[in-house]
Length: 314
Ligand code: AVJ
Image (cartoon, rainbow, N blue to C red; front, side):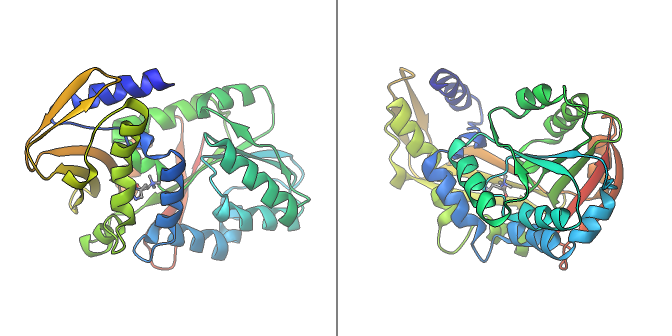
């Protein structure tokens, strides 16, 4: 675990321009900061998708074309606190659908909290949490013959470039059967005045979230990044619909990382690219799925048309 972390950090810092992988944001502190981000007034993404799940629940259920008499599996990739999913679960339950809810997450802590919460609030719903790698778990789920609905929400796919996203969806398809569904939640391309503040909040939580990556390297790889000499910088290209986060060195400096056994020079103004948060439209989604086994059924938008849940059929 630490070895792959070390290898990827080394690789990123030795690239030109320098990069660091966004998946490493999510240690204990990063998880907590992301929860704070989801509650920020500027971070519209979570609220928009919650609007869909709470106010368009029936449309979602209809679009999934489920059969009340067939037991199915509702599998959520990266469930987190499951907040968005709850209304869907309770409505499915009220309408007598038979299903197991299988939230998958890398965080065992998040899964245990979710399980406990659902046991209290929705005791009739069968919940089977699974901790680990999405594809390993999906491969193990292949054995069951139950129809499957995969939830991949929150625009989590936006952290991948389009090529990676296509690969990811292709791999999902390889683990599913014809007729299975994918509910894919994505942020839509919109104007800079809405997107940029979501990644540059007034309270500076997103800045802490981004810079936490350097703190993590200090802690886990014995680095000496001086957090006062780096700053958070988001950018958004409205034509492409791509938001990017950078960490910018505010001085000429050298950083030593003992566990790697290397030093890295930074020039004042030099950027480390840490995250891509892609935004989408119909054409982009169609293009991404065109070489996968999925076809586009419908999309459901929130009331402000900021966010979309696409329903795809394998
Ligand atoms: C969890 C990947 C959807 O890109 O909007 C929030 C992560 N980064 N603020 C996003 C994030 C900075 C988020 N996703």
